[in-house]
Structures are given as structure tokens and as C-alpha cells.
Image (tube, rainbow, N blue to C red):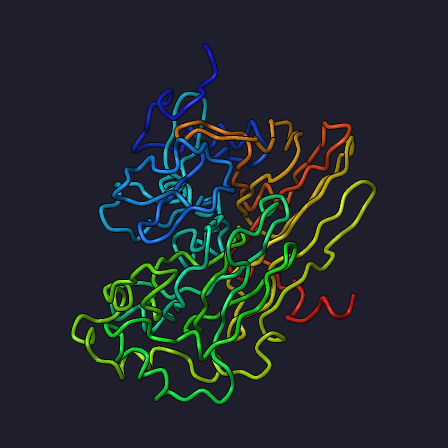
Length: 420
């Protein structure tokens, strides 16, 4: 039987997936192949660096907006208006059948994500994405756990890494505003929010922009304002889609008030003081902001023909929510990489194999097309070791992988790159 080429060639299974998962893991040494998961945003303009075919940028419909995100190993639903039932959920591909990773985790639990994460969270609580826009997005924040709980959601710390493979061009504004200038007052911010309908509210006048550099990154706590720039960004983050937009006009486009208050209690939607108090003031005006949030790669392990680097590390309020690594395997080389926990993996350059399974980074992807660039690795598979082989004679094989909470206690501390 011909191998499936698109999701249309697959039969979707909605229950009893455990036996399929177990057979797939036995055949692959702990790996599950994933189909691309595309997400649109109605208020943003796609940056066209996701390798998605240009004819498919508006595959969800023009009214839904362009596709500017691809989510990896996600069991988190996208918080979009008029969303599809499975928007944001990654699908596992086994033979001619598929099912969501969320289903697989629900039925297999600790066998996939490890007992520590399963016992504490009863789900895969993190995800990552490519976030790709032509220009900047509004200055916004993500609520912390306590704030998000007021509307039945979870808070969201997040991190950034700018992979060189997806940033051959910087697009319109490769700078990100973060926090406020030291000395900014709450009254100044309150005035910006109160003036929402009087024209551009000027909140960026209170902030500072940092130039974005491919191959570097940032760790951003909840309740810190940030206006991501136009580099394509790999974003390991907590499994939530809460946010509040504090900027009302971006590149001439209106940001509706509804996007400011969407994850705040309804009775507080017109309470400007409450909205301002959602921000963590000390963190936003931190005079050492860059030192406390900026990341550069730190070597994890280096061997004959390969180099594994930490690209996301550090803690938020003394807790490790997620970490990430970048593995580079030189042409013709093979390496076996062991890790302490389950992870989601995306190949961003080259071709080869992963535990004998095909692994390659495609040049162009149609909306419904299946790829061979994304996998989920179980905790048992990661601890046993995963073998990567670069079958190219000219090009490196490069993969990004992200991990769940408290998996890597040996990860570097913030600022570790300075000591290399």
C-alpha cells in the first residue's frame, strides 16, 4: 500500500489508541512521528518563513487570518475565535491512521511523558512553536498562574530562540520591546490604557527595544510586557494561550480592546487600575533586564562529528518550566544522544535518520502535507538514547528539541553563556 502523503490519506482514530502507540514505540525506539500543526492569527501578517507554500497562507480562510505559527508536540488548544475543533493539537501518524498527541498522552500517561510529569500534571503541560511575522506584534503580557486561574486558564512563561535556518531575512522590524524603562510610573501606563480610543496610546514610548540576533534567545516571565519583533522564533512555553495586548495600534492596524481583556475577569474589563496591576512592576522596570533574561547557546556535550547545545535554560521564580537544546550532526556522522525526559523535536536543516526513521527538513510544505521533520520522544526512549545519523555529504543535520518542567536540573543558570 502506498505510504500516506497528506492528512487526507489518513483515518482519524478517536479512541483506543494505546495499542497503536505501543507498537509504534516498539518499532522506533520510543518515537512518535507528528504531522505539521498550523495555527493562524487574525490580527497578524505572516512572515513567510515557515516553509508553508505561499498558496496556503490563508488555508483556514481569509476571515481567520494568515498562518504565522506552527506548533510542535502540542496538546494545547489555540485560543482563537472561530477555531476548528482541533486547532493547536498535534497529530501522531502511525501507518495510515492518526490521532492527537493529547489522546495518546491521556491513554498512555507516564509511558510517554514519564511518571514525574504525569503524576504532577496529568498531561503534557508544555509546547513549542515557530512564531513568524512580517512585522512586530503588540506590546503584551501573559498572565501568571494566579491571574489566569481567575478565568479558568493557566499562566504562561515563554522563551525564544531565533534559529538561523529560518531567519535568512529579518523582515520589517527585527527588534523586540521588552518591559519599561527604569523610572516609568504606573500612572504613565494607566494614562496609556485610559487613552485607548484616542489614537496611538504611546505605550512603546515607555519601553526599550532590543535588536534580535539569530542564534540567541530570551526567557520571558509572565506579567512582563513584550512586543516580539519580526524574526522567526522558536518558542518553548507553558501549555497556555492566555495574553493581554496593551498596545492599541501596530503599523496602523487597530488592536481591539477585547484582546487586552480577553483573559481577565469580565467584571474587570473596564477597570483600568486592575489592568495596570496585572503587570509585575519590579520585573518590568528591572535595570538589569537583559542580564536576567538574555540567552546565548551553552555547550551540553560535544563529540566526534556532533555538538549539542543548550538554547533555552534558566528558571522563572526559581522554577524550571522548560528547557531546549540544539543538536548539530556533521555530514556523514552518527551520534547517540541521551536525555533525562520526554521531548518534542523539529528538524530545521539537513537530512538523515533518527533511530532508523527518516528525518529531513523539507524545502516547502503544503497545508495538508505530511512531513518527516517532527517527532515526539518518550522519556524511556530519551533515557535509552536516540541515534541520529546525517546521511548528507555536504550539509549539517540540525534539530531543536524542548523538554518539560524540572526535567533538566543540570541545565545552565541564566547568564552561563558569559563563562564559556
